[in-house]
Length: 307
Image 1 (cartoon, rainbow, N blue to C red):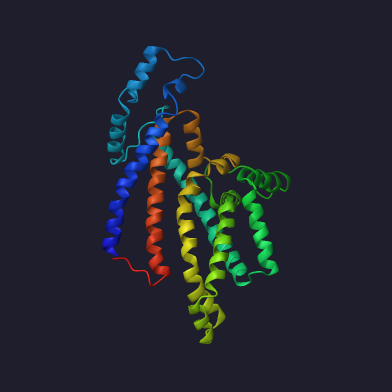
Image 2: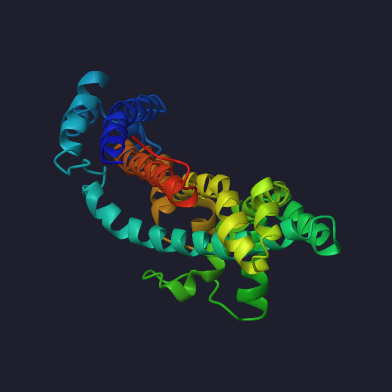
């Protein structure tokens, strides 16, 4: 196991460098960031040259990337065009989005897996048909429609929640935004669990466990569920990074100043340092989440061993 972890960590290095290089190149060709600093007016040539020199934009792109990567390994993600260090923006944005992601993942695990197990064990029955129709509706409706509808009903008309989240973003205010963020993924987790349970229910090892006279709850939890969760764990593990980076719509609807909000502002203002810095951290989140998913395989299925 130890050698496998070390090997995977070494494999993450070229993936990280390749992903950040691609992101850096894409962000640097999306427009002139100096022009965005001057607003509607055209920048004075002397002012533009001074700003480019100040932010290191007068150097070749490859040199800018090498400088950026060298600073990243020292914990310096650059400075935004407003003079604020990107690390300060991260310190205020990431805790909020992490709390929002935790709420969304809990909804996926608790509601999605529970509904998937119930429908998988009762395949073809009315409860299965009802849940499949409900998940199809959730998948079909865009996230911004679901968010605005819940905000209108629960926040404005019924007054059950605050229409917008406070700057501190405590967990109790993130329940509805977390549900909105997790809605589509929750539907996929339900369907994935349901399919996996229904297929493994007919497997020989399940029939053997039933023939031995084991209690139904033990057959489901100890035998059926553990093997059925492998594809679900894969989906949830890769979904962690997607939720953190894809929360732009949800955070805009509920006025949450998290990672999605900062990415939106950075793209809108062509603030390359902010966008590249945040996406770099999200790449690390994806890589670590995938590593943890691979390690969880051995926990769920004893037949899997890593050398």
